[in-house]
Length: 124
Picture 1 (tube, helix red, strand yellow):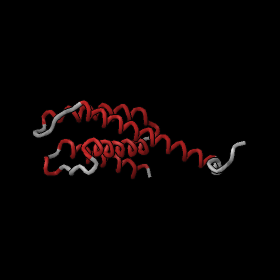
Picture 2: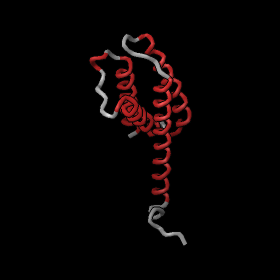
Picture 3: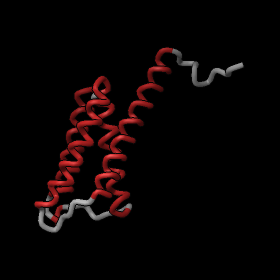
Picture 4: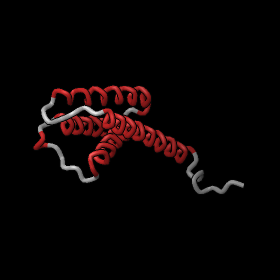
């Protein structure tokens, strides 16, 4: 399962990189608006990498933010693209939110595995 999660994470990262730096004709058309599409794409990347590398979640999230910054800067050399701090912030925050969601999901699964009745049990 871990190998599949890692494959999905890296494929998502490659797709986001291609959409960011690829030719204009190959870029997907926005359906949530530019910022919404950015947020969704990078949220999914954060979730995927957070689930794929749970023991290295902090390191992976820091590396992801640095690489998002590099990806944004690389747009300066792509015709028709522009680097904007606003895009970097949306992308980085969305990725970090994805890592946080993956951590929360992992924590909840661990709680269910250790005590399956914990979710439904009433507290006095």
